[in-house]
Image (cartoon, rainbow over all chains, first blue to last red; front, side, top):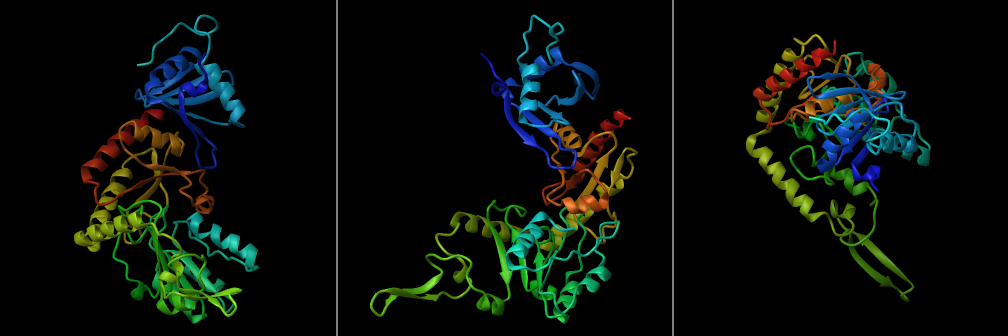
Length: 103
Length: 293
């Protein structure tokens, strides 16, 4: 059974008043992570094919082709872990949109 | 305008020793307000501690002028040279600095090692802050062997207890020699040229705001900026996709961001290995962010 740690290399609390959280996906898992996120979250817009602005439930976040993501307004580790679990570990056959592999 | 490393130790020791830390104001363009510093310096002032160059704005402070004010009031002058020593010729005697500190990792050397210069008379007066091997001349039983007498070594060994970071010191020495072979005036000239060019090119971009002074006579090698519609971290990750490394956040200088009224900032900086072509590439990448409008 997979868990969030299978995809995530590290999580950095970026310094700055924005309190952004940067999630860095493991290099060999980043394509799978981004594919899962694209399957589950809604793409609002892409900029230069590099920044992908996504929404999921009440969250808006940005995913980068390099295999990183920036989340905002995250209260604590548990909230982030729950969100990442929902994005990365969802049941592919149930509630998410048809798979749209990340390129 | 100080890095946290020139704020936090003073605040910690102020609590322990019961003194007050006073801060000189910074002007809107990021330059030091010398009049305010002079007004806040009195005969009660024990030490004035100032960065030679701001690690956020690149502003070069007139340390000589501040040292004169400090010494007039009987205070010591400590200079944080972490952002100046790697980038320009620095002469501690000319500055009349009592202390000057800098880091290895900002000048092609290793992390975890730095240099603290102090005037010899001060080093001789100061007590060691650590005890151990190497920092003593002699440790010997006295009298009935109920206690030991110790005699301290001469400076700088007096302050170097235990086995030192030998690898770090050898590597830092090589970094210093390498920079000296190039010549620090050459380093400064190259960086000034790049900074001037980058500022000119960045000013062409409608969605990029430069923070602090853009007068390169007052600053060196650092350009803090924001991209409209992107947080500093977004800007950094965007550039990262193109293999361009910039820094984002507070840069360990949160109070200066409060003065600039910024949540955080992105920072482009240059060193001897950077080229004009890399700046052109950087500008092309920043242009891509115009799609955000």
